[in-house]
Amino acid sequence: MQTAELKEVCRAVRRDIINMTANAGSGHPGGSLSAVELMVSIFANHMRVDPKNPRDPNRDRFVLSKGHAAPCYYGVLAELGFIDKEEFKNFRQLHSILQGHPDAKKVPGVDASTGSLGQGLSIAAGMALGAKAQGKDIKVYAIVGDGESQEGQIWEASMAAAHYKLDNLTVVFDNNGLQIDGSNDQVMSLGDFAGKLRAFGYEVIELPDGHDLDAIEAALSRKVEGKPKAILAHTVKGKGVSFMENQVGWHGKAPNEEQRAQALKELEG
Image (spheres, helix red, strand yellow):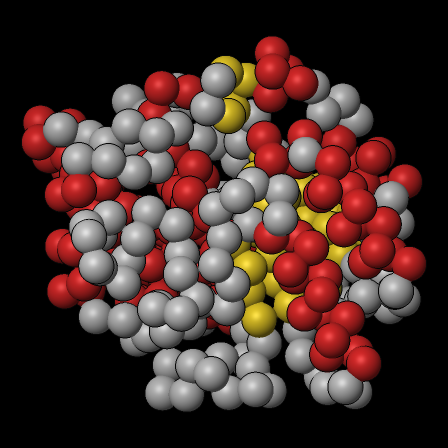
């Protein structure tokens, strides 16, 4: 997709996020909105996947390590034809396929069930290592939250990815600076995040604006050999909805009807 088309898909996904969380009266809009451009770009232009054959063993793989951003994931999958938007009305409802965190057994296009923070990168590294061992040309993408990067398992998985030279693995860090209890710096500072990633063996590409589709496209397209690639994307929590942007309170709170109406009006563009 070209940039103009990607922008329209991003706008649609943001509307989906607002409607899903408002309908359910629960969910995580802030971190879903910050990941939109990243996830749309990965799926639309870089992953070899087919909604008509979502379990193709030779498909590329995607892991949403920050599983609470499931509304973004579901929005992207719906835009690409994996699921019907009619399912959105059942988001976070008992027996729905669209739970608050993605379920690989229920949702076409979901490769890993995630939600326990810190574990998704290990899953992605395992997928990438498995593909290497089988001699398959399979690329693996993971989106990791900055808050969950305070977890030790993220760094153990990073060491393994570097050790096994997983150049078929791209890890995108959604660095919006906020987590459920406050800012990253208040809770546990990540310090020189880019420096740490380099020290752990990544080829690091830092994006000052993690919503710039052209910059994201360039970063995802850059060829790296012999090591995993990390894209450190500086994003805005709640991006696209003025009253949610950079507000930690919108990490896990759904908009009411008045707020839904205001958000959707803003997203009409």
